[in-house]
Image (cartoon, rainbow, N blue to C red; front, side, top):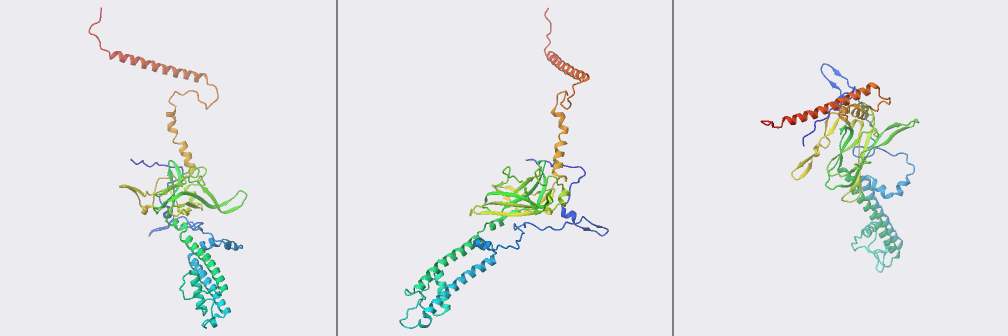
Length: 434
């Protein structure tokens, strides 16, 4: 298909940005002169990291017992090094505790002293020290059963302890193995293969200013029921004077039209139309460069392989929003399939974009392009309009009557000319009848 030529936009008293912000703000040194650029904004603290981790720490939590009330989730949320440490300590402490009980029973019964005497029936055969009691505890809980140390039927307290250790050991195994399994198969690991573009861009789409960013999935297994949403994080002061440091505002990326439901097979460009309901409606390029904000994007869906819910997050600071750029295409049609080139996933290119706000652009496109088309919309002779409610004057009535006469004259002349032309085309006879 032939490519359409880019449309040129312009606004009053504003210039189109030709260079990225980081190039324009950099200080350039030469041999003859030293150019001093505008002061660079201080780096802002992120609310959400690029990898999706929330940069928020909870301090002075008094009700710490709430973590123990949800012990399983607490263990799952721990870091791997602490999980391995707790996993190892739980088993070792459990084996040591029951080993001490087996040794205590043997000590009370006198098996440690009379265990080697003939005719003496110990509680556990071949249990003559704490080390052997510890080994017997491990064999009992892990059901290894080497057959060297066994419990006898003349030890009711040992039988009860055996039942207790078997039940508690099963509970410990279920909890520890379950925690490790859930931690290994956590959906956030699936989010590692979901990609967000390094930058967001602002440019014109279909004569409308749009904020765009790109998402992609590296795996062949898809995210089922994928949906995406975005939040604008910035400070705000209410009309009553209340200061909100991290106010969250929804950014519409299609939740009212269903465009937020994604079929994420190939990389997609998510677009937010900057309209009257958008927080960027009255922001121009110069104003956005002065603003301090953060855009948090959240991609959710179910993992096709496991059916578990997955959530991937990323964010864009105000310095990572590029005005006047578009994303480089990454999808190409090969022989029998579509190929995605992820080398260009984060690449952008500059495009002709007005530097005014979306509100000013909408006003300009609404007013100026319609002016040349107004005569084409009313080809009839001008008559009385509805712009004025005053009755027509005598001079206006005479002008209208003259226009009608001119129209009738031209129509009659056209008819006569047509008749004369038709008669002229008729063949002329050689002689006329007498």
